[in-house]
Amino acid sequence: MNHKVLVVGHILKTHGGVSRFQEDLLKSKIHYDFVHFNTARPPKLRSVPVTGYDELFSAGLRRAGMAIVITCWHLLKFPWVLIRERPVIVHIAAVTYWPLWESAIYLLMSKVMGVKVVFHMLAPFDVFYQRSNAKVHSLIRAALRRADHVVCLSERDEAVMSTFLPSSSVSVLRSNVRVSVGSATNVDRQGRERINVIFIGGLDPFRKGIYDILKALPIVISACKNICFTFTGGDNVRYALDDSLDPLFTPWVSFRGWVSEAEKVALYRAADLVLLPSYEEGLPYVIVEAMAAALPIISTPVGAIPEVIEEGINGFLINPGDYQALARRIVRLCQDEELRLQIGHTNREKASRLYAQDVIFQELEAIYDQLVIGNMIRQKHHLNRRTDLYPNRREG
Image 1 (cartoon, helix red, strand yellow):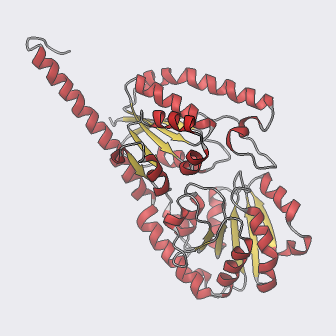
Image 2 (cartoon, one colour):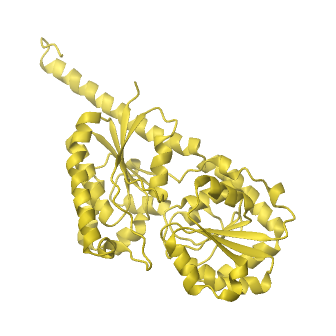
């Protein structure tokens, strides 16, 4: 029987990076048995962007009260789950602001119960830390120092965490991708009469730069009539299109709403270019999925994105909000098929080598093994010490 890992974090039907990572981990071929403790609360779709601590109350007191009640229930239930499942490791999938403090409580409970903890930050920690005051810094440091190993998405986050944690206890673990998502090849994209550009909006298209795309769109269409833009995501994406898209340009735009994984793969196969001009990110799955699908990417140097995308080599990076630069990059790729195909080929190779699921989860398994083996050595040392102190005493 394999050692057991208890994965703690929210999985929502609306998906997102945190849910996606946990679902992939639970289905992985890592040689551990996984149990999931779902900390999800009802998701909130919003028509205006709300970030930080204000997000909890932005939908009204009723939802805030419901969220608090559900959270309290999870916290009361968690110790009994630890006792019942007896995991050797608790893997906490964490994000920032309010959910971080909830995750910190799960961390402390696990340590009180004597369980090793991997604290996995799946949000841009460096931005959150910089925006926090000195008192919050102290609380963050105190919480993360309790973890046995901290995992983050970017070298930026690792650099911040290494200022108060031993470098040996912090690792960068990139987002993973099923390389089969990129089954389309450059041959399929040669000689296309119409260039297909896609934007995967998710729950928060504002943070992902949808309005900058809509500002760039008229500039692009004036130079490239053989182009179409496809937007996916929730109601917030539809609201943005309704509010800001000039009706003159609707023939070049389509909205697909939420798409399944199979539908998203089909979109990647049909696409020639992916846009993600975000203002804040960790390492979004869209980036590594687009790479695996042999697609060029235009994004921004936030989070781990500049650690993955090299300017002009496997994509282009613009400053957040610079819609004119975004338009210029789109036009350039629209008009240069050879460049699109060359960047796509580079991305496909890089994704297969560095971000494939087998590669990423092998790195995570090595972290688990290190913690388990270290714990077994300590237990053996403790047993030997007890035997030395009481040579005539029999254990068990």
